[in-house]
Length: 412
Image (cartoon, rainbow, N blue to C red; front, side):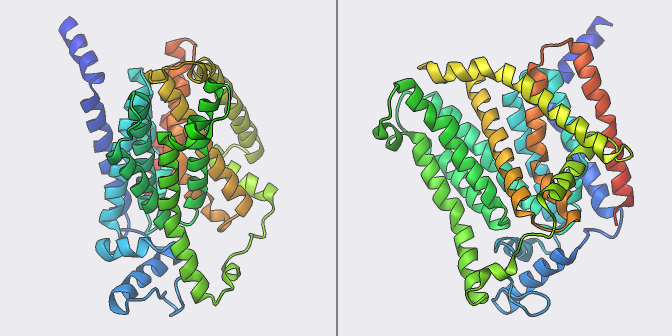
């Protein structure tokens, strides 16, 4: 009996076992998600992407289904469809690849085994991820490139804070910049992530230099590795947006803004649209929208309070200490960094009111893994009874599991 318990305990705490279980569930669900109906699903956007990819091969030109120029979307996704066709394999590759880098991040950012298990199950049971990987959309590669970009920055910041020299890790910097270029090539809305990442690097990694040195020295900024990373990332990631802008400006004969306009929805209506989606990630839609949004706001306030308490001491210490290489402090800064880029993206999408109302979950789906990381960090640091905390957390997982199964069955 003691041997069985010890074996089970060691198995549960083994990271390779955790990875395999999550990978297996994700693989089965995505295959079911794809082949339950008639294969990968297609919307109007999907047909435009596919036709453009076909015309790139035949006519070497960005032309859509109606023989009109391809202008409204970023330029990169049709090139991927040339390789992967209708993206069945691409979507499978993207969701599994996203899981791999998400898994590695969670292993480094949280300490408790129970939290690590929760983060894995929260990912593999998630309805919004299977939604965006059910269609021929640009969100799957965008999310993969974005999370690799975040993973690269975490490792770049860890290696930078732990070295006493001023040499930046060129391989990690290359990955950070390369995947910034790639995610920006997939979706123009990636510009909000570029703004969030760039400003986040400045606020959380460069500004502390001023605090510790008690005065502003521009030389400290110019010679700092984070400044170099910020400049290289900004230049590489903005390049695809500039190329799209140049292409669209030429095709639209200079009147590029005619392609876009703010949606007829008001900011209040858009707030409720996004609130509806986010609250349905936590609670069943059978509960009235007003109650769900109220509970969502209370949940956000609770998470922020717990996160602030958990982060305050480490974050203050990281400003004052001359040795910010300790892992808990590096993790704290990175969690704040993740929170910041999600916040900037949500504000950008709220103000732009892009797409139709039905697109809200599609647009929000790309931040789901990052929200899980934030909640997992809070769960890891919450100072309450462990059995109560994890009991509620794991019981809640039944809801996204049932919701995902239901949606896979009824998607067409």
